[in-house]
Image (tube, rainbow, N blue to C red):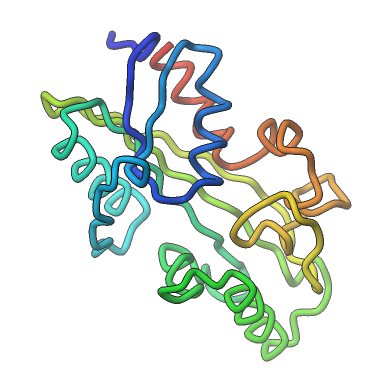
Length: 201
């Protein structure tokens, strides 16, 4: 069984917040994480319509460019009342300039249009799919979810993406109001990484 302990890996992301989350979660295992963004690698086009497909594209691109073991994630917000949207197009809703305020407003406008006003009608989940790819082509896929509901207006300064409007199950605070250590215990990324840790450490 392959292990990642003590390895140097490339995290296939240009998102600083995401890299920080990964680095914190992997640090106890002696893993050194460098990001595709730090290395100046181009962002590959995410042309698949599934989280797994897009995670695989990102991992392959980073692994081929660096020769390192690559860890990628494709994650997104799936809103029940919007038939699972934005889903794999979560980042696209923020536009090329990654304007998350606009993205959150778009989600809210669509919910208002469907008269989704109560927490029960605003159920959502964050999904995280991780792909670990070795230079010899071996691949592992892990998935995690965080269930909750959406609130408006957005609250909190600590998260990124749609965190300020997502209230995880059992909480009254949004992801963006939680201390990063608290969020890292219950996030979709933490759940996916828990599966990865069980398998690879």
